[in-house]
Length: 151
Length: 126
Image 1 (tube, each protein chain N blue to C red):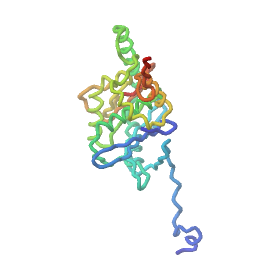
Image 2: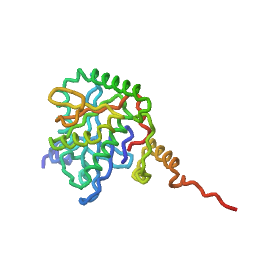
Image 3: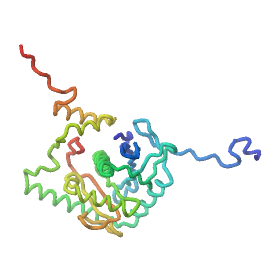
Image 4: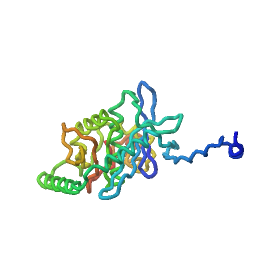
């Protein structure tokens, strides 16, 4: 995984039956008041156009590895910008569900380092397993030692 | 072809706007696509309708719960303990990372685990 100097863009490779695909994670500031919130986008790099496409389905057989790497990138971002929230949201209901399942599966691990909230309708609440959400907010826990290691 | 097109070579159309490039340290750069712009706009709109007024309270309640948990479990092996990956080969994926911070971590870990060029030298038996 490589990142931009400001720690807002990350890239890594997805390797599978469809070859080597460059994935890009982009974090951009959405609002500063009342909370600092960055939006996270995950997409495929198109080498012909040099564009990032967020609505492609790579189907490269390494979904779990991509999610894990994305989680690493978010942790690195949280470490660098500890006061900020990251908005996680899939561009389809299926992707949202996938994010929810991944978070649920590793919730205990996530909670060691981050605060995580679910967004549903117009409300924000503590993330609970088995509940549907439209999006998620993640933030580093104050004073957490990120231990220089992102599992 | 119009006179204007002959002068600026754009067939009478406005020249395209210069697009902003986003660079990685690896040398790759990218542009925003229509889908990315749409996605970011949708998320902005989504966030606008969320009532975030209780977020601060939720955060404080979380912090208090954590503090109480740590007080009740002083030996809790949670976020304050250094974690070392059990599989040293996991570090191989980090080799090409240009982030100086991560490089330093990898170096420290390799040193700690005694792998790569940090392998402990065997003592010569005379």
